[in-house]
Structure formats: structure tokens, C-alpha cells
Length: 73
Length: 237
Image (cartoon, rainbow over all chains, first blue to last red; front, side):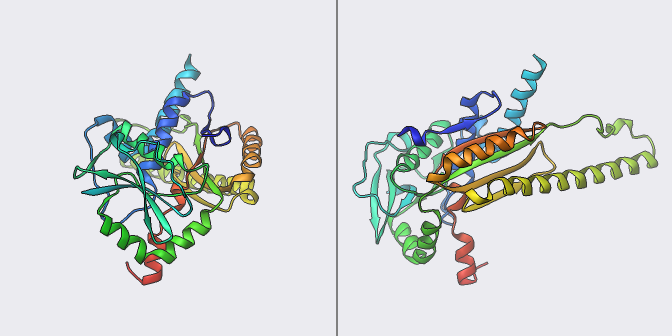
């Protein structure tokens, strides 16, 4: 991968590793071409049940929580 | 034998098959008419939603982003080769239109979060002791929701104005009732990315009351779906 297309995660000093993963999940699980009736997934990871179904909200919740903790430190 | 489908590509010859897919499976390009689909053979009936599998899916789609702009399939797309051929053949005009729309572009993501003020917090349920206070609480909630919706819409317009000249398309989800105010996906031509980043960096400095999460470049996940066009074209509801 060339540097010009390295992933850019620009945040307010948040833990970019976690947010990068959540952003990836948000894109992969919630968007993209759908062949009707052909999304066949099974969920075995409890954490990802939450992330998968609510990833947009949860990623922001995570971000917000990190931000809040930093402000109180 | 089913196939796990990662993405559609229109010009990827030859395909470098070094990237491994879901569960370490080999990835190959299945040519269907003028298009190719990156697929892996898949023996199970469903795809487990795990961190590793999700990242594997993303890595395969991303592996071609330097060379072309793919149309990503959503995670968990398991099909037979026959189904895949039928899908592409029957939707070829819509897919070609979609490719033309995203060609030369990447997706950039912006999420905006607003600090939640606790000054006007509604009373808790056990603090509501009369019908009057109940109605006041309802009124407060209604007014608060309207205000949040107005703010979110204004913010959406503001963001649009900041980057409109640098984007080919956008998808915006406004969520005024949550901490997240809005989530926007911008389709940006590759050579405009530096200007786009500069513009957003400058815009962010003017809105210090907000928190921004920028990410990208992504394959155009938010601009890939053709179901709406297909329904419109064929009148399928």
C-alpha cells in the first residue's frame, strides 16, 4: 500500500487503533453492495454483536467515552 | 461450494493474489463479462462475525484501492457462482452506472459529535410527582428534540458548504437525538484529497464546540449499493 492511501484517522487524541477498527466495522458491516437475501452471517462474539448491530452509535459512544475520561483526568 | 464475494472491479488485469481472504482463504478474480469479482471458496453455510473476518474482508477490498476503485460487497455475501453471474448480468447497466459514478474516487468519512449539555437535563421519573410536572417534562423533551434536529440540520448544511466544491457525492445521516450529530460519507476524487483534508482541518478549527472523527480514504462502501436504482428502474418495491 502506498503512503498516499494509508488510512487516515484524524481524531482528537483518541485511541486511534480502537477507532480505526470501529470505523472499519462500520463500513464493512453496514454498507456495501447487497445481493438481496445473500448476507449470511453468524454471530459468535458477544462484543461484536453489539458492535455489528450498532456500530455507528457504538463507535461514537466509544469515542465520547474516551474523550470524557481524558477531560476528567 | 459457495463463494464469498468481497468486491466488484472493472479493470484489474492481472490480479495480484497475494492478499489472503476470510480465514486465510486464497482470493481470486472471477471474470464475469467485462467485470471481475474478487472471491474466495467458502465451505460453511454462514460467515462468523468476528473481528478477524471483518478485517480480512476489509483488507481484500482495500488491496486493490491503489489500482482501481472497487464496488465493495457487504460483509457476509455468500453466493453460488450461478447466483453471482445472474446478479451481475441482470444488473449490468446499473453496475456500470455505479462504476462511472465512483471511478477515480475514494470515500472519506466524517462523524461529528456534540458534547451533551447537562444544564437542561430533564428530571428523572421519580422526580415527576404531578400531572403538571409530567406535561412540563414532555414539553421540555419535545422542545429539546426540535432544537437538536434544527442544530443537526444546520450542521449538515454547514459541512456540505465546506466541502461541496471538492466532493462528487455525499451520504449524510443526521442523528439529532444521539450524541452523534451526523455521519457523512463524501465521495472525493483522488487528486482532491489533500485539498479536502485541508478544508476540513480549517473548518474544524472554527467549530471548537464540536468533536470530529475523520477517516479515509475508504473504498466507496457508502456509494456502492444499486438496489435503489434497480428498484427505480424496474419498479420493484
